[in-house]
Length: 138
Image (cartoon, rainbow, N blue to C red; front, side, top):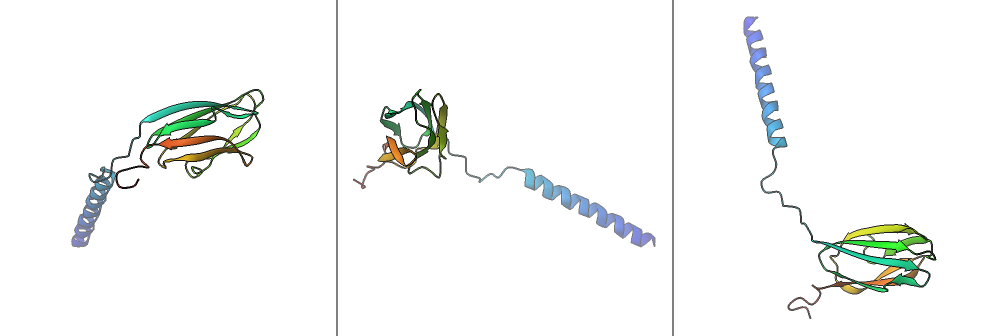
């Protein structure tokens, strides 16, 4: 009987030690985990009016965290403002007179024809500069 109790105690202690070892390894940060990519911040502003976006064409550099602040003028149309070509990164924002909204996205896709659309009508254009004429890809 005492052997059985001793065996049970040793098994219990071994189980506790294994659990502690596994927990310490799980909470330890991975040495080979990739560092998060930090992009430089780029801020730009525009105003939405009945005539469209002012200025109509916006330029942002490639590979930046873009913070596009759009302010609705007194005569701004109402609806969902969408950045075409970046819908997966920058969900549309509700706009209207007197409202200000920030659209945040990483400018990872170079090009000069990303539309800012409200109700299916393009009211302005976004150009992502740099990177699309990399060496060998002209």
